[in-house]
Length: 298
Image (cartoon, rainbow, N blue to C red; front, side, top):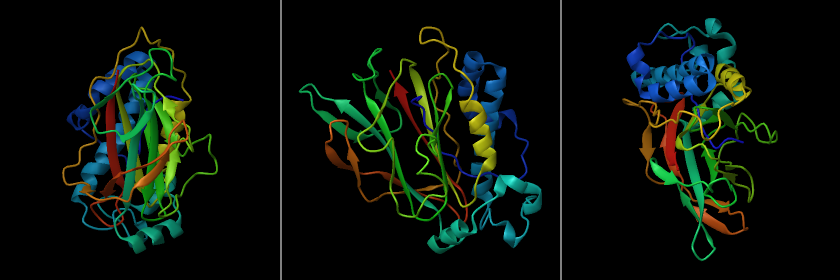
């Protein structure tokens, strides 16, 4: 599977019209995807980041309950008009209400081989550099993703690699027993057990989006399904790399929480280690939570 990652949060029911400036943060990614996979694929990437950007900007202005249509319309959003995009699980909604704001502990982890042959597990900071095995995936750095929510909700993790190619990280099609809605306070590790993802030979900036929403985001599910089914035809020696991280803007968005409970992670050799994830909290009750993580792949 590709080494990209993304998590997505919810957006408004009616597709907004955004100015070009609103997606300037993702222009490098859109241009790379268009050149590597064609204009149609680039347009699909643009629509995805527009939805994410609009959601983040709109929620920063929304004081309460932006995605609870049973309480009526707001800012042009009507539940009936939204239709399938905001189909949801009432149990998940009640769980979010009970928990207050949606919170997500996120762990983006690297396994790195040391000179003495041992392996070290560590959190990946935004902007960190990871190294592939120059054709040997067993030799390079490896990646794992983990998360835990404070309530039953819908979580989407989407990866975009250095060519602009999209990978569905969660829900994982290869692990049907782990799906949405996720269970409150349950840790999800991908891939499971002592399995890790190796880095391929496509070098550049890789971005991971995490989204936690009280509602099922069928619009995102369909968009991602369309993109992951597209073949990747570029070769490692002939592609335009993504060189800038497409970080979703958060003007007054999420609050970063300083403390999170450690997670136990297993290396490829069976070594177990406790790592500290980063905790994020949505800025308003009922709001979707959007998190961008990224690293340099060399």
